[in-house]
Length: 377
Figure 1 (cartoon, rainbow, N blue to C red):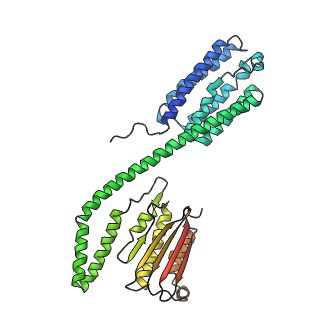
Figure 2: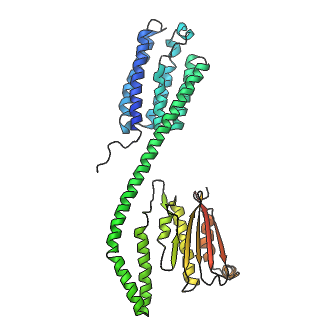
Figure 3: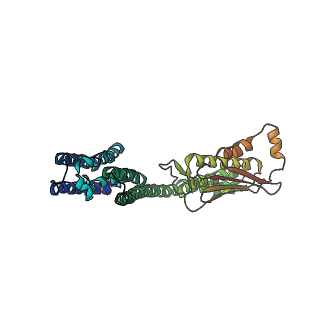
């Protein structure tokens, strides 16, 4: 499937800005033609209308091209619109001011803030609307109710257009991520079928025959079983995502730690965290599981539980081993062996999180590590 020609989801809004600019310039030119006898300086009125027409052409040619919608051009658009509006006191006559005639730019002045809203979003559109509203008051030499009403309508219109532009871009990004995930999942399923028909069947066969033979073959059977479980977790888990914002799925990463003696439980959906935070939590979990393997006994089993609590995540690592004596860690620290304190507690402290240890002889060990999803910021 070929790539879409239009990459900016807000392109329809840009086209609307161009059409509106042409229409409003035609309206402004018509006002000058109809009221040409009323202006104080007709030559200046035609000069301003000509400048507006030239800018309409230049900005329209830029806005219809995706690479022409630069920040500087949009800022210049708002600034030039305000400057041209401020020529009204030299163009309009006193009679026109007395009858509240439209400024020389008329409704053409509203297009600049709409372009800013399309480019910068709601906040940028409102700021541009306020700039033009202030320019309107200065050009009319009076900040009356009409000026405030026009400014409010201009800011509200810019707000809505900015929200629409932001929503269009965020929706397009979400759709692109979904399509990439779908493609990655389809490829993973294809590989899973291939692996299931070859590698997994071989590992399962080695595990069964090794257990039947016993002795050293049983140890090989255990290793084959662990690799079988790890490989099954790899091909069955959702693809881990390192998104544009530098995020990673902690759920998928922890599922790869499952073995014949380690069971991993996690939410059904992805648990996206900043990539460095996810990597640190995986490292902490590996360290805790390594301690289980070293100290809990050869027959000990371990359970890893991942909980997504909205603004924070909790990872619990529990085993059914022999447990830890109350003063064991204190003695290890006194002897200069700071493995647990440095690898788990200090890691979590650096992340702005906590690491709680619950253990006693004969009832196993449980670590509970807790951290905010934003890394404590």
